Length: 367
Image (cartoon, rainbow, N blue to C red; front, top):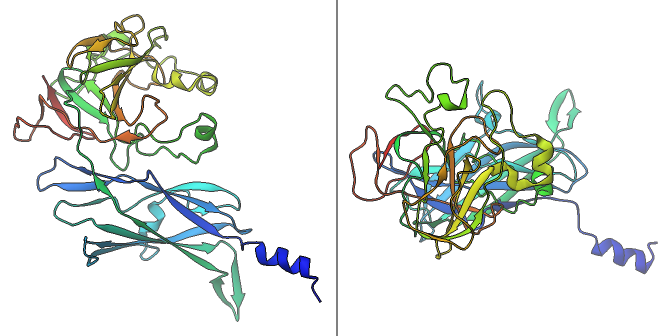
C-alpha cells in the first residue's frame, strides 16, 4: 500500500515530455521582390527533450488556414522516397535534457495565399527500436503541435543601401544563408547572451565589377577588393546609439578574429560598427568598417545618406563587405526585422520608384 504522502508526490510529478516553442514570437511575414511574388515566414522551432530517451524527428507537416479557418494548403516533409525530404533537416536527433533548433522547412508561400494560421505538426520517435517477431518498430512516437499566426511587417524607416555602386548580396537571409541559421539554443550563443537573431534579415553587401568579381587579380591584399575603403552611408535618419572605431582590420586570407575574443566580448563580432536609432522601434546596425574611419559618435544625429565610415575588414569576417541588419532594439542580441530599400535597382528587374526587397545573390545598383 502506498503511503498518502508518497501518493501525493506521485500525483504532483508531471510525466517527462518533449516540448516546442516558436522563435521569434510573433513570426513576421516578409514579401519578396520576385516576379509573381512570395511571402516568407522566417521562424524556427526550439525543441526541448525532457524525456529519458533520445528522440529523432521523423516528419514535419503544416496545414495553412485562412482568417475564417478554412484549410487552403497542406505540406509534408517525411521519410518517403530514396532521398527523403526529412534528410535535409539537420540536428534531427535530440538527446535527453537537450534543447535544439529545428529549422522550419515550410517557410515560403505564394503571395496570394492567405496566411491566417499555420498549424505545424512535428513527429518524433525514440531512436531505440524494438523487435517483435523479427519486425523492427519504433518504441514510441510524440507529435508536437504548434499554431503560428504570422503578422505582415512593413519597414517603417525610409532606408537606402549602406554603400553605393554595383553590388552583390553575397549572403542575405534566405533559408540557406548563414545569417538565417543562427541556432539560439546553442550553448555558445546562450553564453554570449543572444536573446534573438538580430541578423535574421541581414545582408552582406560587396562591390563588384561587371563580371561579378569582388576583387582585382587574386585578391590577396585588402586593397585589391573593390569594397575596401568605400564610403559607408547611414541607411536612414536617426540618432547614433553605438559607435566603435578602434578595432583592428585583419589581412584578407591571412588572419581573422580569434574565438577567444568573441567569447570575452561578443560585440567584437561586428568589428567597427554603428547602431542608429530611427525613433520608431527600428535600429540599423552597419558593421565591419575600417579602423579609424568611423566619423560619428553616440548621441549624434545623422541624415539618411550621410557618410559614417568606410568599408574595412574588422570583426568576424571572411570577405571584405558591409554587413547590414535592421533590428528591434539597440542591442545586437535582440531580434531582427525585415527591411526594404529606396534608390536601388535589382539588375534584371524593372526599375521602380518605390522600395525593393533584396536577398542572397541579387545584383544591385545602389544610388
